[in-house]
Image (cartoon, rainbow, N blue to C red; front, top):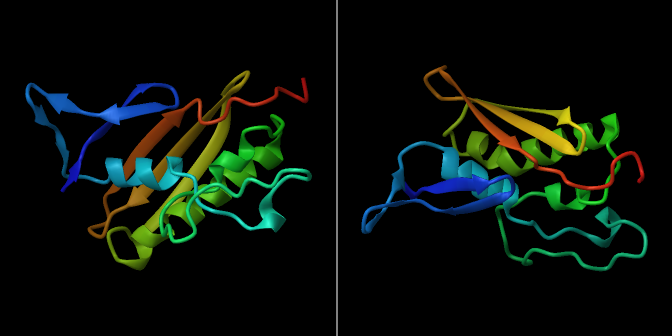
Length: 143
């Protein structure tokens, strides 16, 4: 059981409160939010030219590289990288057996807005989908 996080607005999450108590999450939602939207530390090779901020913390075992896409162009390669970074960040769920498979799908929802859909195949074979809008708010076609 986790403390539940809810999306307040695109890109902004907060603790969920029910009256005077924190809401709990019996599912995977909070674990997925933390895994995707916590910055993992990267190597110098991952960084864009001229950037030296590796973010994250050296001992973090959770987090993603999605933050590297902040200034990426709105092109197919950015979608591919978002899917790859998401799969990498959520692999721990498969490794420990809380999921059979993870299938991220990124698409341009509209100009300047990436939709990230994470399909999780649970151990019992059921699939749960988690959708995150406005994962990306960078340059549009280099503008």
